[in-house]
Length: 192
Image 1: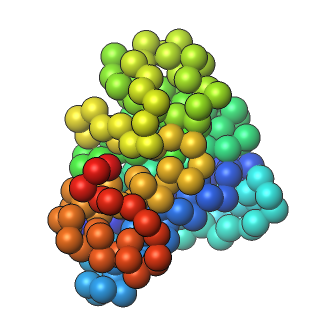
Image 2: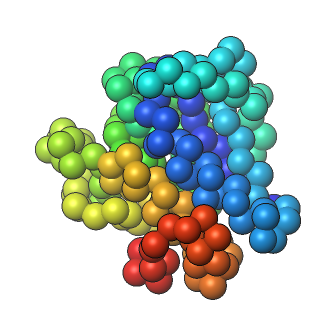
């Protein structure tokens, strides 16, 4: 079973984490016990997202089990989250043991502040390209960009493509495409 941790923080953009959560969880309806997706926050208190959704974390950063994949979403709250030393230390400490460290939208700035994007190729929300480039990142205008074990996704809805990309890499294109068909999302997983 692949264990995935999605980092939560106040003012997170809902679709940035719900999109990958849905795709990476849905596979279990086709092939049971393929993934376990955990919502990880600094503490166990409900997290208020940007549009008002309140999310109850599954675990804390300190108590989090080993992760195969880490997802850093974005949103307005990334401005505080990318300066949060607990989150940055978690990313730095866990990145060498994870198969993939990923981001959605402006979640790329959490990875950049942790020093994980320096000298790499990455993407983010289109209006933040120049801001991300200031971290010595080669910014590419794409839905999904992989540089080694780091996988970044563009703006908001690109979290869905990130999920399909990860499913393709972990379980093969056929199964990833089947998940896309089941959730009625028109994507060619081979092209990601």
